[in-house]
Length: 327
Image (cartoon, rainbow, N blue to C red):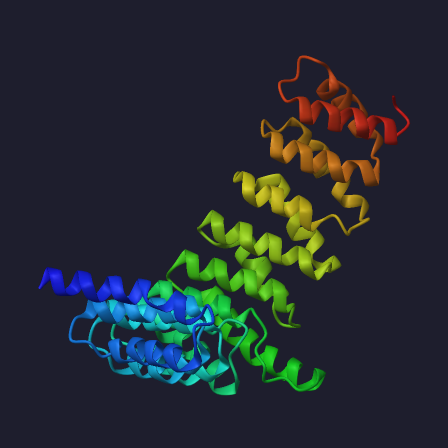
């Protein structure tokens, strides 16, 4: 049995290059036929090897056979190999197979199918991804579905269609951001809402930034809030600077304030100059360079001294002082 498997896999890996190097169309067709025939071999390892080889070849004519394998093969590894080959070939013809795989009994297959639909989904695909994001029992599937919805599909023919499409997705993402039990799924929803920038998204994102129990979600929400460049976000972002303890959240909140000229941001930024985090200091100084609050000068001079540990932060403080005319 092992010998038969070794010979079969070796043949799959070795016999095709000569056919595709110009040794005759008929010969190539025979070799290709052998590969597609191997997709139904009794041994799942042979089926996996054949699918991977067809994917390596990017052979579009193999799409129907690979779709059939994804839909019907009883081996999880073979289904994943077929799906992987279809992704490499990147043929939109495979979308119906991805839709079917979203209902696969195995969560890894469903997750891979959801990821494969990124940027390729049509109207049916959008609805299927929304359903998976809201209802699938696996957080990995829900997360992949959310991220795939963040890459525009091909359903919108003009701006009006795009706006309606994004509004449907936005409502589902807000529901996920608010209610999903997995912090990874909530963080993904926050990220996608920041890309879409829908009219109803800012308030839920601000709520997540301030109140979510998980720092990764708060950080993702703060980053998403920055994409809106909306003055309504200034006060909540200031609150983050005063009260948030997680470095990633604070850094993203400072970045989110870059667009603002609101004088209220000066005091919390100056207070961040007492932070022990080089990342927070660098971002705070970068924004201070633009708004130039005089109350930052003494702290910047202290930071710029040679005894401060981080050379990068020291140089950034010196640069800020020069721009503020304090060199």
